[in-house]
Image 1 (tube, rainbow, N blue to C red):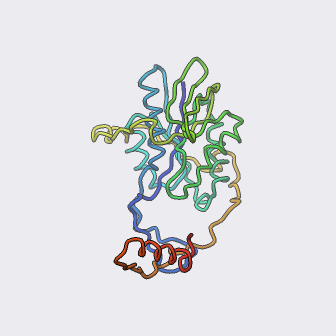
Image 2: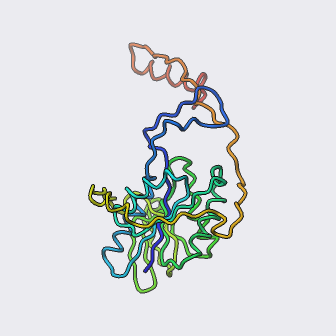
Image 3: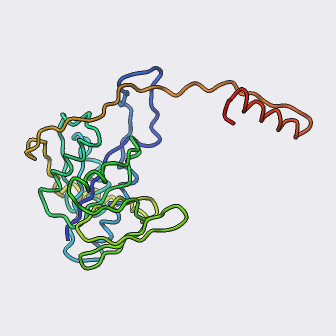
Length: 259
């Protein structure tokens, strides 16, 4: 069995963004970058399948600059992935979700994978589109936001939470799944395994290597805006709590315009 896990390096959620005025670009020089947290659930699920079976190979696939390799080594190869594929092409620096899905599809179609895993979304753009787009482009069944996965003989059964209950979906393999919190508990890499990860292969490709013209982006970010400054805090004072409540309701209705 061969499993592909598509991952992304993103800014750490604690990274402070410096944006004092509207700008066409973000200053990313001080960003600390990590593996997308939702992708960690996909990586862990692939490793669990590998540990439970035999003759299972797990391949981590990502798009990004050369600096992505350290994240791939520590958070993918060091926890059990067998190899990695890095698409490092400067022409993809401003690629949107559609372009990235096209490139990932080209990479995945170069081999035969029984299962393709994604995180449900990346925490930087929060779009949650690429896994679904790849499934559509490859003509494969897709199950989103799974919290449990069981594999059978050429089939899978996935559980996903829906409003007011749980949905159980069966699908044939190969298939594309997007993983979310609750599916498992991602492991941390040990220092010896981080050292050994440097010996595992990382294939580095460009769009030209894939026989692919750089796909044009269908969307572009035109401007970044800092959040609006917080308004002045107004304290409602009244001896009678009922009077305070009435005054608060009036302010929310007439001034804040939120009710």
